[in-house]
Amino acid sequence: MSRNKLDKYQYSREAENVIERGKPLYTTIKGKWNEVYFGNTNPITLELACGKGEYTIGLAQKFPDRNFIGVDIKGDRLARGSKIASGLKLTNVAFLRTSIQYMDEFFVENEIDEIWLVHPDPQLRDRDEKKRLTNTSFLEKYEYYLKPKGLFHLKTDSFPLYEYSLGTIDEMNFEIVSQTSNLYQSDLLAHHHGISTHYERAFVSKGFDINYIRAINKKGASI
Image (cartoon, rainbow, N blue to C red):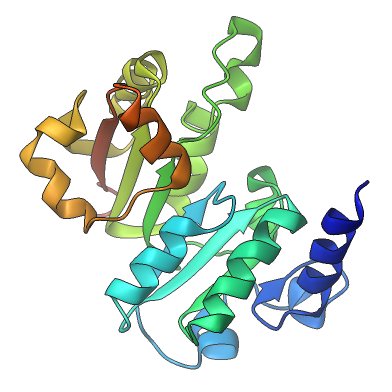
């Protein structure tokens, strides 16, 4: 492991806005994000597989009256997002280092208002379907954490993942309210607040289309 990566892991271990194994909140934060970490009752948005947290930080800047949590397993990536958020003095941002499959250890039912999934690994091989973050087992988790009428967003440069997700989301207790296979030529682009990741900008510059799905959790509500 490179010295640079080791330094980032060390930064992540010491950063107050990163919650990871070995820190007190790692085992006590479940169901208490607003009460214990943010100290308010503002709505909570998750960015799953957030990488460096570019969307988490961008949204937090746009919406200071909301709370944002970036979730990723890579400590060196989270360290980069943590450092940027600290430099911007964003008090409405937290980062959680964990695998998405273990989210039950950190969130309770109806704790989350909105979930963003931005350019996840499409896992296109048939044998890797269970790893796709929009398969029905993961969507069932998202439905559980989201409040009734909570929002789920997917952005992806992978058309096969987009098509697959349209099918799996439709099978679950969600209603797809917006969709496009070409976000940058769609009126829906305005709802993205000018926020994009480095990865997304690189693909758009090469002529790739960005696919987008917005769905509402139908749990306990009539849409």
